[in-house]
Structure formats: structure tokens, C-alpha cells
Image 1 (cartoon, helix red, strand yellow):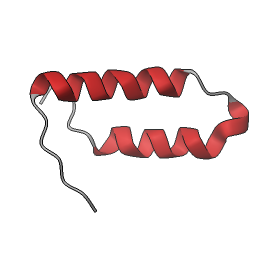
Image 2 (spheres, one colour):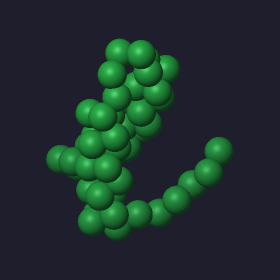
Image 3 (spheres, helix red, strand yellow):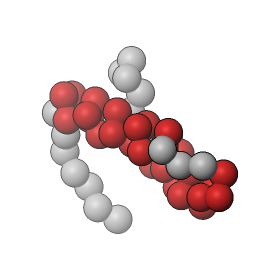
Image 4 (tube, one colour):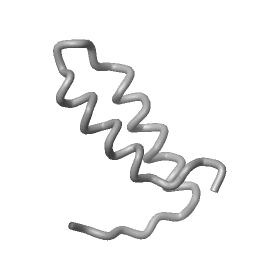
Length: 48
């Protein structure tokens, strides 16, 4: 496990990049979609 510290701006960028990456995949990459969703779930919400 790794721990990284991000500013709010960096966190927003990472969240946006993962959402964009997620949007680029289709149904044949279900394992990748699942992993990206798992990572997004670990990130603090945008409202926090």
C-alpha cells in the first residue's frame, strides 16, 4: 500500500482524469472499469 498527499487541486485533477479514463472504456474491459470504480470510491468526495 502507498500513501500520497494531494492538494485539493491535485485531487480534483486525479478524480477528473479517472472519470475521463473510465468513460473511454467499453464493456469488454469490465475488469478495468471495476478497478477504476474501486479507486474512485477510495478518493474523498468532491464535497469533502
